Length: 363
Image 1 (tube, rainbow, N blue to C red):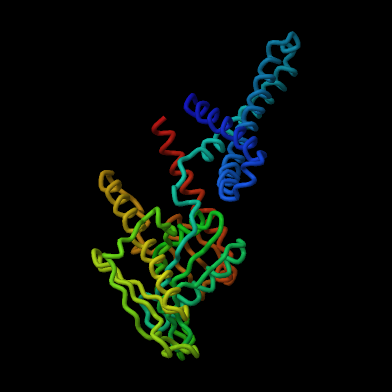
Image 2 (tube, one colour; image 1 turned 90 degrees about the vertical axis):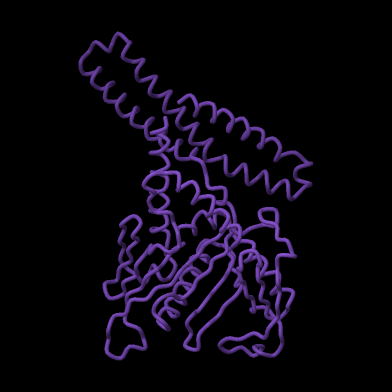
């Protein structure tokens, strides 16, 4: 593990350096610098702790092995006891080493970013829109349980309370790292409230999760944009259709269109529309880069494209199945109330295992 030793030496050195800098008055006097260094410190801390635990386990293993050189090791019972201890210590070292490798795996550059989530009703008419509303409620409750902040950027509802389109941002540590697994087609199997004969319908909704793009990530040229105003439309609302405050932004080079009508002010709607557009364009650019990488590989599997069906919510059977990892969990009402960690943890573990396997194959 020479590469890991080199990497860990650098991480530990930087961690000690951060500890010193965070306690200096000039750092405390600069809030932006303090936040940036503190974030870096928190990111490095679990890695350093894991490395120290591994070093301690290595020392204990070396001590156990040294006992075999002692005169008492000639006694069969003593020797057997030491060999048992060596076996246990070796397993500890292997487990801690594996954990350390996982912590050192290359991270998605977007993992620390906030996100923009888009939910749309798919196949299934009004029932699809009602399912999209159920997903919006599910993610809202999940965001609240994590202590993150959710801001609705655009909401287009149906008369029956369904959602044609919902676009919202999530601000919180690790938001993209957790929610990125939700991109794709979500399928529901249930008896719609509008169904009088109790027949089970299958409907879909699409979810797109994009890292929130800063201006430095993707700069928009205003000459490439056409901005139109129109009157808000939708189900209900006393301010609907009163003023032309809704904004439609068209990105001329790509033909991408974003509408925002949730705010009463043109300026606020314009800012939110540009925020969504910037994030969509960044996601498109990153997807093109990933597609180019995938095209050079043989037998690509699961690109994460949102056209893939990722999950089924079956209400009559009280089950939720994630098709990417073949995981089925029951108690669907808990899932719909935002208890998504079991699914997300399993997806994250699978992703880590795949990265670790590739790392071992390369090594």
